[in-house]
Amino acid sequence: MSILVLGGAGYIGSHTVDHLCELGYDVIVADNLSTGHVQAINQKAKFYEGDVRDKEFLIKLFQNETITDVIHFAAFSIVPESMKDPLKYFDNNTYGMITLLQVMHNFGVKHIVFSSTAATYGEPKQIPIKETDPTVPTNPYGESKLAMEKIMHWCDVAYGIKFVALRYFNVGGAKPDGSIGEDHNPETHLIPVVLQVAAGQRDELTIFGDDYDTKDGTNVRDYVHVEDLAEAHRLAMEYLRAGNDSDVFNLGSSNGFSNKEILEAARKATGKEIPAKIGPRRPGDPSTLIADSTKARTILKWQPKYDDVEKVISDAWNFKSKHLNGYNED
Image (cartoon, rainbow, N blue to C red; front, top):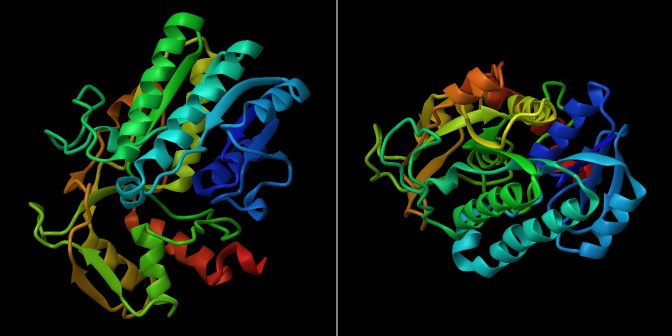
């Protein structure tokens, strides 16, 4: 009985694999390494290199292993890129989900935990956002993931494949010992970009827009520590194993931090000056995203251990300090 983690060499996937392995679960990782790193995979996990859209690859994997649960991280996730190349996102994300569910159905695998996104909501009507709020994505990334959720729903109706979709917001941090962390190329996420400036690898930070309807004019986001997300995916898997019905859960710290506040917290955590300037807005960026994660905390018994954004940044800085050029230097 093994857990298949698709995208398990990526940022959130590798922390989830590490979390599962340390608890003694039998873990299989499948990743095409387009954005992931072999060095990030816990050595207790078994690794297959391949693509979620490759049906023959998935069939062979399911033939070789006794898989009972799937955790899906194998989606592209860059909002500006999705605005420029929407078909790339619908191909990898939505078509990839269809291929996976076909193989799961053929092999009788009935549990999938899906790494979804708050981008499914679009520009929220209220803050904090509840799972029952309207889903009107403002970018192809969010649209592709909402489509994936809907496809899973109909596969539950038709085939009894139970799913949990975890919608979360901005992710940060790293394993506290600094052994694994965030390493994308190019890097587009705020905290690692700020830390690249702190490390002298960028001249300055560009904050995209300061005319939003927020407390200081910059985007406000809910930051969740990656270790807390890893635990949430395990809890969701155990929820399905216990025979519960499919469901959707928000994950968040329930606290919103603006880009300027993240910048100040990073200056404090790193002790660096971190020069910054204001640039134009990015297409598809909602002004404020903060999760109401009451449902996950109540039903999944999820209790985030790292609600402090300075802890998120200091853990990320610890990884950055030990891997200045990411996994490439390993």
